[in-house]
Every structure is written in C-alpha cells, then in structure tokens.
Length: 195
Image (tube, rainbow, N blue to C red; front, side, top):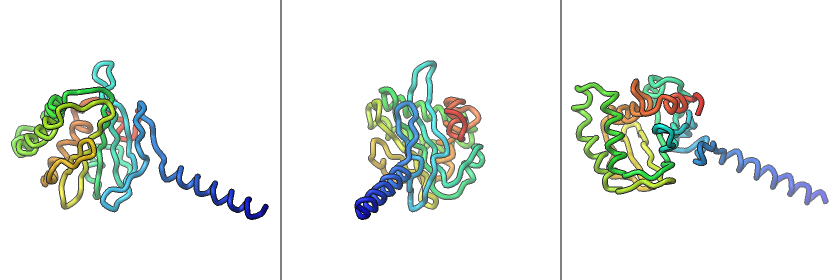
C-alpha cells in the first residue's frame, strides 16, 4: 500500500511539473506558450493580443522577451533574443500581408530610415509573395538573434539568411509598437496590458 501511495505521489508531482512547464495563454483560440527557449535563452510572454480590422479578427500576436517590458523603448533596449509570433485568424493573400507590413513600417519610420530599409523590405515582400496565401491557423515568427540578425520563419520554415541590420528588427517592431501602430489595443496588449 505504501508503494502505491508513493507511486501516486510521484505521478502527481510529474503531472504537475509537466503542466507548469507547458503553461499556455489562450487568446481567441490561439494557444501561446508562457515561456519559450530561443537560442539558449528563456523568453517570457511579455504580452499578447488580437489585431482587429474594423470588427474582424485578423491575427493574434505574442511578444517574447527575456525580461518584462512595458514601453517600446524598454523592448528596443533589451539585450538578448526576442520573438514576435503572429498566428492568422482569417485567410489573407500573403502578398497583401507583405504590403501591409511594409506600410506599417512606412507609417513609423522617417524618410532617411526608409532609404536604409529598402533592400530588407523588398526581400520581406518577396518572402510573403512566395507564400501565396496565409490561412487561419498559419503562423509566422520574427526572431532577433544578437550578432546574427532578424530571422523570419513562415509556416515553420526559416526564410533564407538573417537580415543583418539591427534597424530592420526595430523597424518591424514599429509596426506593432511604434507611434502609429497597426492597432493601438494590440500595442497595449503586447506591452503587457489588456488583451
């Protein structure tokens, strides 16, 4: 009897630790891990929310950082890897999505900054054009690796070599965290506010 009791306690402890390790946050049916490991660093879900276009839910985004940050400046200054995860909630033409991302950068960057970003923007536009369509449930990741650059992964596939320029990652983040974000409520959510 003692053996069975000990076995039960061990099994229960194992189940509880597995549940703690795989803690997720549900945002409009999209499950986001509370913590992830990226390039050997443990990142925490800083915030997550939904992008709305008028009344339609377009996608869920989650921002992962090594330490919590509640302002765009704190996000930018944080050392270590960073990740923005985007999961589609509706079907969208992938080329159109690429254009919307480029427009988001244009809305937040000055002309001088934009001229430096043109090669990266053209390449990013091509990455999304090549996808043809993003359907509900499809995901893309924007990862920053210090010393390596920005890596874009679409539907689980890394899209070529890293974008080397640090300003490219910052420009991408401005789509969601800049002065003219795609969605002000989503910006607040990514910075740890309400969904």
